[in-house]
Amino acid sequence: MIPECDFLVIGAGVAGLRAAIELAKRGSVLVVAKDSLRESSSEYAQGGIAAALSDDDEVALHEQDTIYAGDGLCDPTAVHTLVDEGPRAIEELIDWGAEFDREGGKLAFAREGAHSRNRVLHAHGDSTGREIARTLYHHAASLPGVTFTSYSAVVDLLTCDGRVVGALVFDSGKNELRRIHAGAVLLATGGLGRVYRETTNPDVATGDGVAMAWRAGAAIENIEFVQFHPTALFVPKAPRFLLSEALRGDGGVLRNDQGQAFMSRYHVMADLAPRDVVSRSILAEMQRTETAHVWLDMSARKPEYVRQRFPRIYETCKAYGVDITGSSPVHPAAHYAMGGVKTDLQGRTSLPGLYAAGEAASTGVHGANRLASNSLLEGLVFGRRAGAAMGGDIRAEMAEGAAPEFLAPSMSSSAIRNLAWEFCGISRQKKDLKMAMQELSMTQWNRPTALTLADIERRNMHQVVDLIAHQASWRQESRGAHYRLDFPEKREQFAVPSYICKSNPER
Image (cartoon, rainbow, N blue to C red; front, side, top):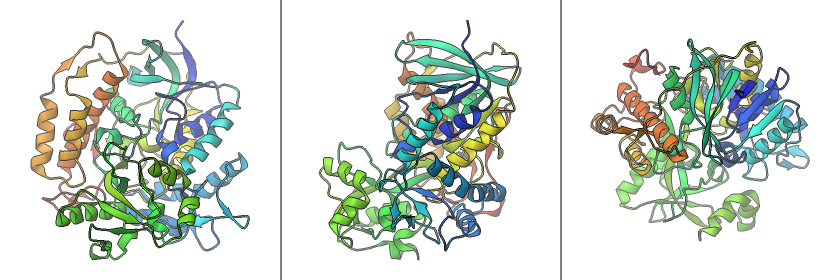
């Protein structure tokens, strides 16, 4: 018998879990996770979650800051939806047991880069994503009709007559494929940062949702806009662990190898400038001083304050021989994808039966550059909205559906990641993007004798880098997180979202 459910949710981060909670009201829900249920980008979100809840804040100010960060490409309606529904989403989390940091019994609000007010909530100092995911998981698991399966990688979406009707899933534990049919499918697969050599993302973030949606024929939007976090730990043989922007919001100063604070030479907001500016400024300073990294100096704060405010960061860095109460070696790394599978405000994609939410989706909220700490909020707000829309999309009969033939690229994962970093990274230009596309196009494809998770991820990474290169080549300007050395200014003819799908591959 073919496994069936009313609703299939691919991904167990904030967006997927919030959607599952909403869908539980309408039918049976299966949440599929590629790794353990705890391994998602949400778990690693340190910075916090932004919402206009403090006494001196307003929804209109949060809206204004978000649009400013998006550098001309935000969808104003999507932004208004995010900031207007944000406070209610936070209050709902608190009702479900989320424990945000407080001062004197009141919620404690911090400020991060490009925010005009203190509006960022944290949980346990620097474990905000983990606390939100914990709260949502426990609530979802308590609801009848919601089930979970882990270590199950989705290979491809199943389609029938142009509609998505389920997914082909690889069970890593049993090394076997199974077909799951559903009335509607949600992609909540998270980010794509692992396609880059230097990244803060967990191993699971290989752009799976974007790649499988593309293969099924869905439209992809703004995929060239990849945010690079300025401050990842830079220690040989250590992971590029993210040192939260909240460190700079709490007094941290970037210094070069001579101990000089340099950010004021690059931007009027100095260390609190938008992330794309800070990332490029660090690279410029590294090139100017001929060094491999810069330093994040927290010495303006008392050591015990830093240890208490950022306990997870402190302990993790300590394990790699770095004491963040002084100066830490940092270097930019790929962090967040503003673009993804194009959706409307209800999470609907261009394919019937397919929805997307969270980092895998492009709702128009982030435009060309995400405002700090808006990502967890987007997962909550649009995860709920996608779940509500999917609830009305149930089908009485399940169709069989078909998936594309599986072929794996001969190019290794490390080669793909190196190519992405060197040719499609923080600063781009025509000759590099052309080189990337040429190398990717010359890749040989083979049918594996025994399918593995590595094959599935490598195939998706190859596809995502190719999409990034094509759209970065098309966007002949610099805007937000997309910077072209050969087109360093914004150009009015490109003040539109990018759009690409199989039926329109030239744009």
